[in-house]
Length: 349
Ligand code: FES
Image 1 (cartoon, rainbow, N blue to C red):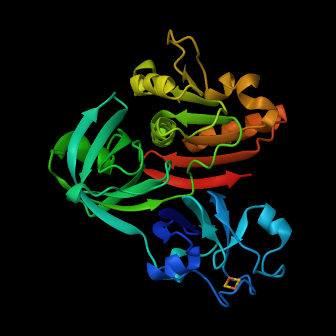
Image 2: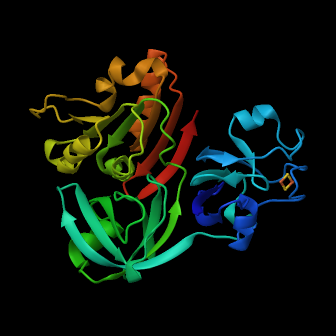
């Protein structure tokens, strides 16, 4: 039996390693040439401390309180030299990947399809070379080279992890480097380089209601998260906590992937979604901004984990809205993106 451990470094780089039954995370990492911080490797110094965000494990009772106190352990902190996983895990490592002599990964692939979904968004499908399956945490992004330019742009996966075919929702930006390539020159079979995965905007273990807020092509990471949850459901995993998505766009014809969202409501009985359109002239039943439609029933008096992916003004508006309503969600993870680039992932817990 082997488990997959995602090591999420301070600089946003994620490395996936395999951990054998009974092996500590530290030993597994070293075996795979990831030099996690360590000094004693004996549960004494505390140098190897990290935070386990997801998964089951055993810390044993060989370490001392000075290395890891009971309070720290109760908060999810771990000593990687003592931690023996009992399932797949996600661990936050509080140093940069370069300090651990590891780096972001790189894979090659070819363009399998480019489809214009609306005037505003394009779906790019890439087949990875040799059927390679790309490991990432649903919600994360990757750099994609733009052929013929020497530049890259960053996009969140809209497909679930562990597939050899990956998809992205890309905003069609006038004069954008990637938009120009996709609308004017892209052809099936074009070679692309993908560098990543990256980012700390990813779905954590679901232990309470979840509210997802998507603006425009900010829908992409939520599709990846929901597809992953649907797969887990198929495998008999997954809880009963409600998950609600509010998906806002500027105009009616910017709403895309609603068939996929409808299918997800069938596959995931705990999932519901609503759409919102800004355009005054729209006949849509819900108009305005996402914040106008965050009803009490989806806020659960703050007992909710909130995920938001959208442009900076949307992030600011939602933060202000929470403030004005006196709501402090249990956690708030957000990713701001500019038209050309995923920008910053942040977390308020
Ligand atoms: Fe010293 Fe883990 S390396 S406690």
